[in-house]
Length: 73
Image (cartoon, rainbow, N blue to C red; front, side, top):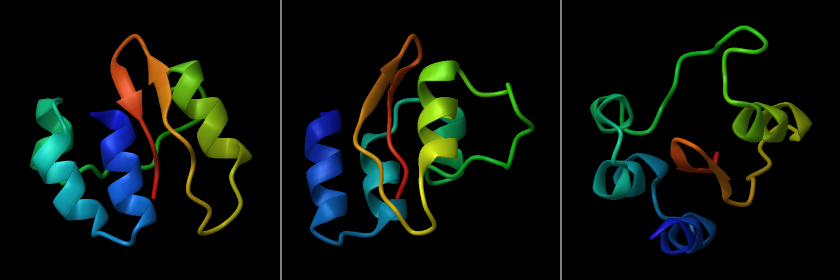
């Protein structure tokens, strides 16, 4: 499912739409996949390290954490 969502985003589908359809976390669904900006160390390392390594407007690949699969777009 995560790879499918990633491919949909790469093809230009709306992040909000994809997140609403595939997110399983209640917070993710309620916020259409958006998370609040958090201070360093607040995200699980698998996701946090990926986020800080990205350039502006760069989309990450899918990463897995104990909480599921994550990507940014």
